[in-house]
Image 1 (cartoon, rainbow over the protein chains, first blue to last red):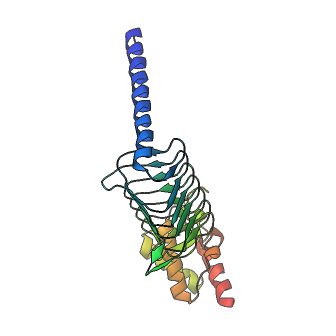
Image 2: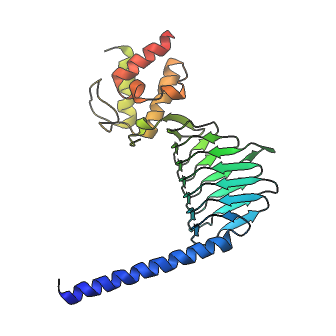
Image 3: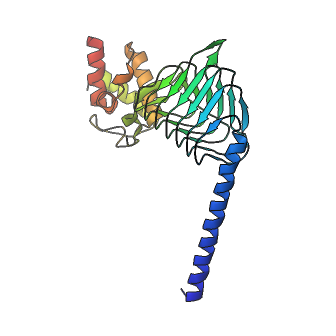
Length: 187
Length: 79
């Protein structure tokens, strides 16, 4: 490659890095606007609009991010209710979280698109507790009162009605729990 | 080959469209059954032999080959 081509490539990749950093700054600023009414940690990023109704207490941990898509992520926290999101959690588009009492999410959790968390059903509320390093895949539904242990995986479309122990995978409707070793996924 | 092994082998071949495999072959290592298939297998075994598998029993040692399944079903029926 000629010296000119090399220097052009370096210049272009430098520009791309600058543009990337600029967008990240915009996303961080947007987090403070979109998550108005929440306690927001450092370097939280929001890419695109959110549908928020925070009447209680909501705490979003540092380095968490909310992505955009065809449907915005929706977070509703009722008066007196509590939503706690740990550090470095990632929410894909269309995630819907309704809190009437308490939802606690640990660190480094990943939420696929259209995941639904609601701590109320038929008028009664029970807290949802999600541990660290939990991955909840597309379209899963987490029912009230469910506790999910550290490192668990919730399969796409699962309807989780009972607790999921740490390190297990839940799949189906109603979800059943089995060892992650049975999925062929390295644990 | 026991009746349990024959029943399980027929179910696996009919449901997951797999060819011949040995009784000791791992379903996962040989990519015969995926994770959703594994749950189908559990539901079939429970329905066929009339017991409920505990969450902690859904591990490769109990489910990952015909041999393991036959031993597991025998233990559950004896209990």
